[in-house]
Image (cartoon, rainbow, N blue to C red; front, side, top):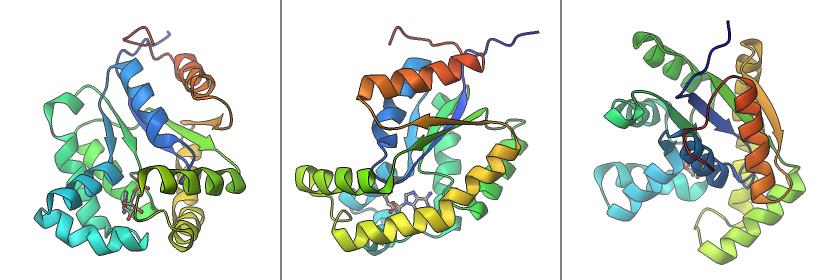
Length: 203
Ligand code: AMP
């Protein structure tokens, strides 16, 4: 029997500069689910000067990871909001094996699991070029050369291994992240449609 899911529980993973934020928003829109980016949540908290923002500001500016307990608590709270009940797209979380365990436990309690993980592959040189451009355009304070190098090495050391866990579950779709925005979106949509997910909007 073929399953036609209307809503999906998705994760998009890729190195900084892979375009996962942009693609995440597009894919979430196409499938009618909220895009949840922990980086965006943290940056908004810093900008607002909230308690959370004050706790994470220095960590983010150094390009280090916010502690798992705090990050997982933020995600649990966000996923508990009504709009994430039928599906969601996570961008930037989980980012290490501890966070994979936290997310598994949370979803298991709800009788849920991730349905698919999009791995956006972009060569390291290309990531660095894109990040330097974004630094000039958006003036993100964590986009300096040294901090970019730190973030990419954390990705390779801590984040890449989470893909092994998900690969063993058979839920990873590797997508080539080099091309135009529309081409890359189409590749991801095709991969998800091949898993039986149905777009909710004409994208
Ligand atoms: P991003 O926009 O996803 O690159 O996230 C920006 C910054 O937010 C990261 O460099 C980390 O400092 C922090 N951050 C975002 N997501 C996480 C996470 N899942 N765990 C720990 N820190 C995170």
